[in-house]
Image 1 (tube, rainbow, N blue to C red):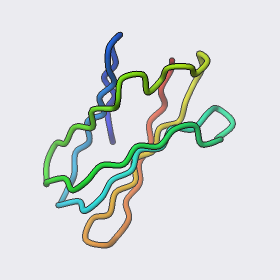
Image 2: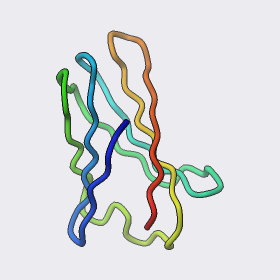
Image 3: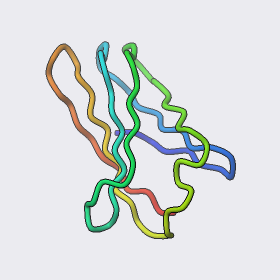
Length: 87
């Protein structure tokens, strides 16, 4: 399961990968599960990996509960997980 670290200047998502990942995509959904933002990453190694999201990734979004999903391709098999983010 990913974990989210957020302060006033940036957002980081940490994910533990059980194997090499060819591509990973973070998607942020509103409370009504409407896609709000998307961020893609290149290859990741086995173990802990960090996504440093661009500054202002949450800028302009109203306060509320958001649904963050992480989809990764591990040896051509998709894996998904999710976490809820309160802004």
